[in-house]
Amino acid sequence: KVVAHGSNVYVLGHTDYGSNPWNLLLVKLDPDCNVLGAAVYDIDGVDSPGGLSISADGSTLFIAGTSTNGAHLLAVGTSDFSVRWARLFRVAGAEDSANSVAFSGDKLYVTGWTYYSSDFDLFVSRFDAATGDHELTKVFETQIEGGVDVVVTGGKLYVAGGYDDPVR
Image (cartoon, rainbow, N blue to C red; front, side, top):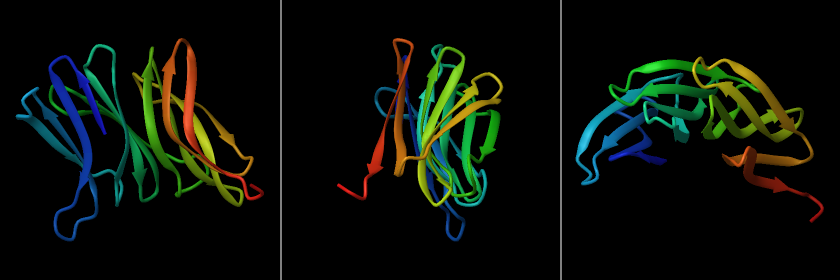
């Protein structure tokens, strides 16, 4: 995942060292791809990146992803990579995956999938960007589906994902 603001580029991935499980890797680059900073985040067991977004003023990165015991969401300062807040959240259980995050106004919108009832279902959750407080979640339970990407524009929320219709 990659976002840019001003003359900085931020790249999110994962890394592992020897027998350690995957952790998040965040790297800050200048326009010539010189490394300006990097940090590794160990959240909860095996951590996998899902989405990356940046605040309008460029001061905060928002990271969504999946960990051993649920989905995660972090706010990280761009100046020093310090964690401002972190949330491990579950929509229906430990098999939740947060695949994308979008910043709009003072809100964060996260989409992914959760194992709800008897199959995987798409979810969209909203969080307060300043505090990380969860505000609401909507789960769509029609068939097997999952959210892959989310964007907010023109006051509307758009979600891309996959849908498995067993009849078609």
